[in-house]
Length: 370
Image (cartoon, rainbow, N blue to C red; front, side):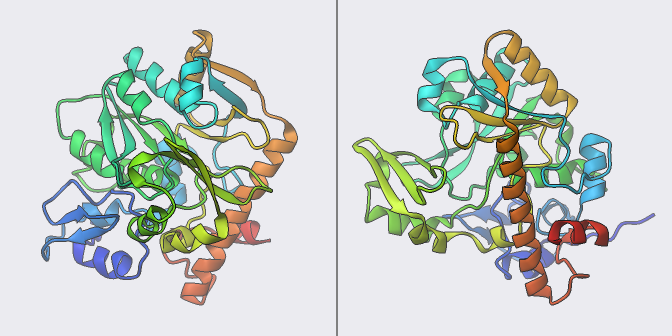
């Protein structure tokens, strides 16, 4: 059966022109036409080739969550708060040095370093920022490079472009640390009907990051430059409620900015997203709210469980139970994001039967909105 394939023209008209681009980078690094520039995807020339990869891999074009779940987990989409989940625990790096520099418990840094050391992956695609806080995808082949990329940025990054670029080389086993939209794009590559799926079989590990929203680069950088020298910024953080601030860590100390001053810079595409916990990753990691120095860790796949258990066995990470009240609160926060995203989609289309890019059963939609 033939598959209708759209291409770059439709990507521009249906996603870029409608400000639905999440800047995941899935459409970049495969051809000379699409590039990123200062936090935007830019078409350098008109492309009329119906190759379809740029359109097909985009997380804001048609997404059948059941198809993707079958491709990633071998099971139907778990239409609940957190998606496919084998277990949820708390975790932190066993290395004090990693914990002191990384975000929260340093679990992502520790597991990525361990996967490299054990030969589970040959390289890791991470997000790194330059002196102007502009983030991009970067390749790490050793633990020192991984440690240098520790910390959160909160500015949207085209990280998947680095996977597209590096997967065409001799490297055979690649891991990616991905936000929800980036993990969704990688899942679409796995499920793609196209013959050329961009070497997605080289993807051996996806570590997902909890994410509520990401910021537009240019406007936010101008705003931030008036408050702190960009070249001195180390990382950002959003402390748990009731703080309601965006914390900026710089060489000279930290600065708190009211969250209400930062929210205007959130990308429009984040408003139609229904995934807070990177549901298509092997494991997903976020803060353990109210428990300083620990992460929440969701194990989703067998590969994710094997990695976590091996790392725990060697003391690379420490594991502790996740309190039921913490899990309940995480489920509540994730469900609220799904509700906000679906309501925004319905506001745009004017119909709960037209969910823009999402393909969900009516039962799932009713379950999320009820």
